[in-house]
Amino acid sequence: MLSNKIRIRVRYGEVDRMGYLHHGNYALYFEEGRTELIRKLGLTYREMEDQGILLPVREFHIHYYKPALYDDEITIRTSLIKYPSVRLEFDYQMLNSQGEVLSEAKTTLVFVDAETRKPMRVPEFFEKLIHPFFTDQA
Image (cartoon, rainbow, N blue to C red; front, side, top):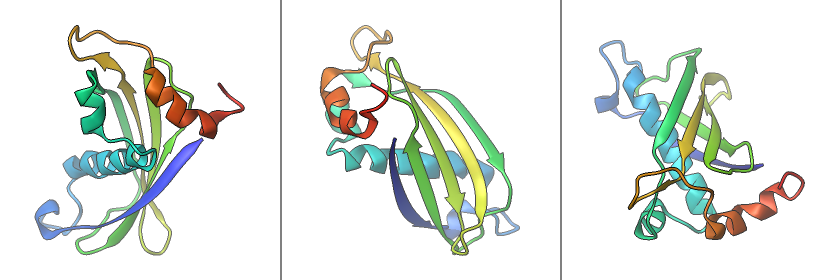
């Protein structure tokens, strides 16, 4: 399994009148976690797109337990939970500074050929990067 943590401070423009992180912004926070997890491999979304590979989100599921509040420093834990084939499946946890789980989410992304816009198998260069994290599952 491949995982990573990032910290984000909840900004004023992202909260509602109650001071809660607006539910629509959670997807952005989890996307930031996913982007940084891929960056941990030494790869960026831009580099993949430049090679003709897109990664649209196919599914997004979230459970809210407690609100993230304005000015809270939160931690996003992102994990690639399965060895990818055509799909990439990520798990996320959002924690406050006391370590309480505020929300959990899952996303499924699909490798898509930018030219044909059709799903494709995991690219070889990506597979080589993640293989060391999944040596018992590949």
